[in-house]
Image (tube, rainbow, N blue to C red; front, side):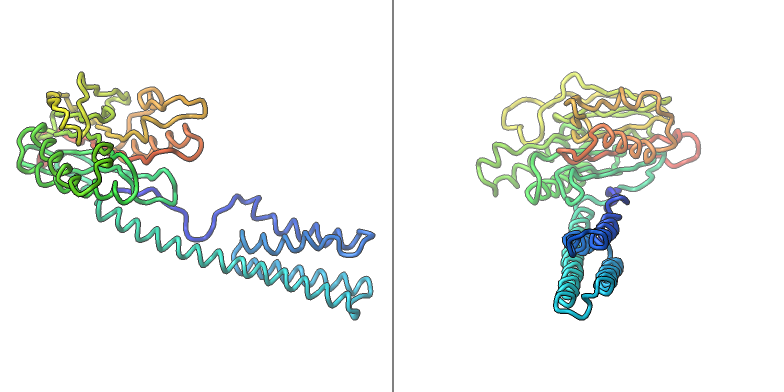
Length: 373
C-alpha cells in the first residue's frame, strides 16, 4: 500500500507568497524615507515581521527583523532623531514588531511539530489496519494506493486486501459508509473476516456471507441508528490459479475495470447486489461473473472516490473516457499514478471522499516457468 505523500512539517507556500515580507520591508522603508509624514510606513514594517514569522523559517524571520531594525535606525540617523525620545520609541516599536514575528514563527513551528506527530501516529494506524499488499504473487504484479480526501486526514473507511488462497489469489476492495474511528473499526473487522474466510470458503458468495456475519456481530455493540445506517460496499475478486481468468462478486460497489492493449473497459455486472450489512433484507446474493484475464492486462479496482469525483460543472469522472488511449502501461503502479493525477486534475481542488485503488497486472502465463499463484 502506498499512502499519498504529504508535505513535510515545514510549510509549503507558492514562491511569490514567500516574497511578501521582503516586498513589505522595501515598501515600508521607502515610504518612511520619502513620505513627508514621519514613519507612515511603520504598519508595513510590522506586517513584514509578522508575515515573515508565518511564512518563513526562523533564520529568515530573524534576517527580516534585523533588516527592519537597521533600516529604521538608518532613517532616524538621516532625519536627526536617533538621539531623541521619538527616535528611541521608533526603534523600540520596531524591535517589538521583529520579536512579534519571531514569536509567531515559534508558535506555528510548535503546532507544526504537533501536527506532524499526529500525522505520523495516524499513518502508523493506517498501515496497521491496511498493510501493504505483496508486490508480486506468482504471475501477478500488484500495486495499491490510498489517498485521503484532505491532506490532514490519514485514516478513512476505504479498504483493500490481497490474499493467496488454495482457490487462487483473492482481492477485496471496500468502502465503509462514514469516516473516523467508527469506519476504521469496521475496516478492521472486515479485513480480519476476509483474511480468515478467504482461506476456507471455496465460493465467493459464502465468503461475502462470512464477512457480513462478522460485521453484524460487531454492530450489536453499536446504537440502533448506526446499525440501520451502516453498510459497506465491496467487490470480491478471485484470480484463477495460474492467472488465466477472473471471478467477480459485486456487493453494491463500483464496477472494476480491465485494461488491455491500452484500452480500459468496465466489467459491469448484470446485478451489482446489495452492500454488506443489508443481508437482513433477505435478498439473495447475485451469481459470480467470470471474465478472461489475458497476459499483459491489468485489473483495476477503485472506490467511489474515483467514480464520484466531480469537476466544477458537476460532471462525474469516467476512467473509461478519460484514460482512453493512454496505455499501454508498464505495470500497475504506472496505471494507478496516472489515474490519481487525472482525478486530481479533474476535481481541480479538494475532493469530498477518500480514494482507494488496487491494480493487478498479469505479467506472464502459467507455462513460462514462473510459479503460479
